[in-house]
Amino acid sequence: MSESVDVLIVGAGFAGLRALYTLREQGLRATVLEASADVGGVWYHNQYPGARCDVESYDYSYSFSPALEQEWCWTERYATQPEILKYINHVAERFDLRRDIRFNTRMASATYDADRARWHVVAADGREWHAQYLIMAVGQLSSPKPTTYPGQDQFAGRIIYSAQWPHEHIDFTGKSVAIIGTGSSGVQMTPVIARQARRLTVFQRTANYSIPAANAPVTQDEDRTVKSNYAERRQRARNSPSGLGFVPNSQSALDVPEDDRVRTFEAAWNRLGFGFALAYKDILLNQESNDTAVAFIHAKIAELVPDPVLREKLTPQGFPFASRRPSVDSGFYQTFSRDNVELVDIRATPIEAITPDAIRTSAKDYPVDILIYATGFDAFTGSLLKPQITGRDGTTLQASWSAGPRTYLGLGVAQFPNLFIICGPGSPSLLSNVLLSTEEQVDWLASLISHCAQNGLNEIEVTDAAQADWVVHVNERSLETLYPKAQSYYMGAEMPGKPQVFMPYSGGVRGYRRILQDVAKRDYAGFVLREV
Image (cartoon, rainbow, N blue to C red):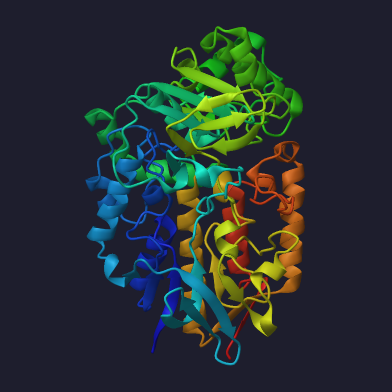
């Protein structure tokens, strides 16, 4: 017995909930499949100590409901994971979203029926759905990278993955703790765990740039000020390249006196967090301009890490600032001056094995009670390629993307009619305030679906030519930036054997929205809209 719906949405994080609300408001029968036990997506699973958003709370929130904007009160400038999850649960309750979500339900396969223009979806437990439209809202950072260190199955202590953190309190008191990885999760949890553990050893492969979060409580006056001008704030964000609510300094970093540049960087360091990369318009476009930011950040690290040997290990080298997504921290560099904290450079002394009670490098054994893998994700494509998705003429998504993801606008894929991806490869996604990008894509897709319903059309398919042109455009825009100069998940470099192609769209939130608007005005150019 299968269930028939208009739209099947996979994922109950921010994107899935927004799609459910919007499409349901249009009168469509929509159902969400969620593999986890509750809503939240990445914020449901990433409950590690210190987990925090790197976009300001007022901007990392839904804009579709002015009433919601006014009633919710954020407590911190950069919200912690528990507060974000509380917000997501509030939204689910306020708009009665849970009644259309099937929890503990993992999609195993989806097959397109070209004769009926509908998707047949099967869950891992055998339940089935038929839907006209299938929307993948699985997130870009939702498929943890597997770990393959020899001996890890014999480890006698506790192993925890930052991306699948247990939903209970973990007591580090008196424990020897190891963290493998210094991406955002490792950077955020290190200061917190260091204050609790007897001993903390951090294993670092690549030193990454990290900017102070400049976090602070939100005062009542600040809350009133934001809410009295919320619509203007949202509009500024939509019209900015990043969706962060401010535009880059209109000057080049090379066109100002050094003293002025240092003052600008100092102000950005103490306030902008992730937005430091926009202190000047060409930091991510011009190597010499980027070098000025690198010199400033290196000097800051030198102030925070007095020990020269340790400083050398922690100072990023060999790639432009922000070409790998920078972290936003609360005392990360300072933590390594604590007596109970040690940094291990695993490029110099690689991990050789996990023993029952230690991590063995080429230099020595490090005793461990609790081992934390903060090793990141199979980004952008990992969760999309896990289920078996079969489009027209038996074409699978795995085969279609064997040389790297190919989309049109990051939303649709040729040979896969009526399949849409929220913030997929080829869209601004992780190069933007992803929540803003999510809402814009959901609203645009909702308009497209409404247009087809009003005109008696039931199939939407990307053309091969439009997809090919978009892939070229995404690559051309990336080559205007410094992103390709680093080995990062932007380039697919986080997974062995993954195709090395640029994943997101670097043309900016504002530029991308203008393209979406133009496509719609030209009768949804690049899509074939038909009645089957």
